[in-house]
Image (cartoon, rainbow, N blue to C red):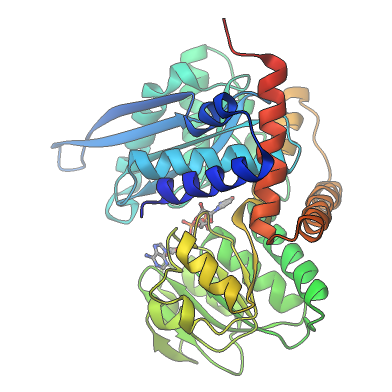
Length: 412
Ligand code: NAD
């Protein structure tokens, strides 16, 4: 089942539980706008290569749409649409004044030089220029993209507008109007929600064994903060495979290794494992922080964690969700666990609109307030309705967007 089919199935189940009006339910099933663009670039060897890019705006009911841009060989319209819809729910769950969007280019960024990446980014940004902007749709990084790519998008947009427009993207370098704390925000939110979920389960954080799939922006920060909270990170991985050591890994040393352009499996003090083996390791906390669709009917029975915190978007299929729930494994769903990024992106946008910047501890404490507030509300609703946390989070988010849709009415 595709990620979009999984997310629609989840929406349908929640719509039924909420007793949503069928027309509103249908409205929410469809993205507002989907743009497919071709992105031709000249390679360094002066050949023409053509990539395909997407930008899907699922909803703008609660405000301008917000969502990352992914550079990955598997990017397609189905995936981008599902991720855009998840952004609508995530922003609504966090009570942010945003709808949801997502974008991507089907490419392997590891195979492109820096100059090729810049040309690809600038051409993609030009192609989606008409539908982005601080008052309509605000991109941010996702897998395969970073601060530098956001800087190129901001510059391309600004050149076409004839004025510097920092609020068009978030997670920019701080020098260009980025927010302090944004780079770490998603991983920080994963760490906060992990601590809250462990407390809810009555399990000690100190000494808890953590396994992290994906050692990029989200996974490496979450691993670092969790190890700072007293957890023992026993395995991490990247696209090339993983490394495990039951005694615990030195996360700072691994971060330095990755910064030097190496793969995590080159870390000397551990045993090399595959990404598949990593998901089945004995641990208390499993943090999938790479691609979607990693926990499936095929491996859910072998997962040994007590708690799964979804750093990635859509890492658990519907069938895996049911199997894991039946086995008593507690899941903090993506739209709650990884919302730290969009919360601080919201702060960045507010700062850019006002040209007035906050201190980092102010950013982090406001992040904590919003995220922990949402966590507790969701947990309360889950208890009240006798449902799991994912269903409760979706119920809260979908009903908020549905109520706003009803209030605004259907144009014309
Ligand atoms: P990133 O590009 O910084 O890092 C991705 C990591 O995953 C890298 O270590 C990469 O090697 C690894 N990876 C790629 N393909 C893999 C595979 N097939 N198997 C195992 N590992 C693989 O990306 P990121 O920003 O950390 O995003 C990771 C996930 O978190 C994505 O699902 C993204 O949608 C989600 N997310 C990111 C943010 C954010 O602010 N960056 C916010 C919310 C959710």
